[in-house]
Image 1: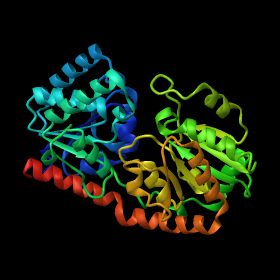
Image 2: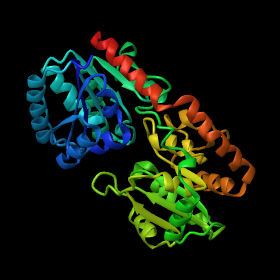
Image 3: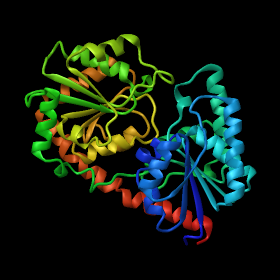
Length: 385
């Protein structure tokens, strides 16, 4: 079975490290796995961690026609040389470049996973261009996978892909959740106390947490506005922001950045390799995103028994059931977000109920082992091994 060569491609290595964490390490036991991405130093580091070979391609995340043509040619030459049985892409730029290069190289099985569509929040000529990019990507692929049922419906409703060419594996998600790692019992009381002490947070404070990219599309503007309004009700509220800004791709409003930098109750913590301690000290996870595929971080919060407030959009509402393991809110609605944050902070019984249900629902539906086995079976069937 190891003779089956699979090349897995993402635009940037952090997708391999976070969105597809440890997949390559698992699949190398059954197939000859090579990972391809940009950012050479980081890619090499991940390759060593996963124990697989890597190949660098200078992908960009923006629309850069000349650079994209160069990347496509370099990838085509590499695929002709390697002759893989399967090329499997994920993320938009890796998708269009990877599917075109593998089509030209006559790779027999070309799989593309859709894990979110930036075009959902685009307008005008950019939206038209991105629509055609998706249609072209799916046309070049032999098999297309959506990581959520809502996203699959959106793709079919917009005529991006034929029904018989696209499907969702298991209950959704690209990677599932490692429930042994994301276990609230793994974070001891002294570790939580040390973290809270280092941040200057007291036990009586109520902690809201966000983890992800600090960009407009994730609803950070609305989150900061809602939190600022909350502080008029209670100065014990704290907001932890774990993640990095992306000013070149999707910047926040200037007044929001100023508020983050100046408000003593808002803690900008940057990128954190291990988010479990931050989840462990939090009372509520907040994720007011505009668009998603299937957000891993909500799975992680749920596995750590943290109740969630999330936007009522595809992916999010396939994990969170309203008033069962979290609260669903309308996207881009500051008032509704503030109301939900206030409710979950004041209603101890509700919060306790949501917390108790959180891990149980994740355990039942999104165990990582099931997701990996489903994808492994897909590889086996398609490659006839």
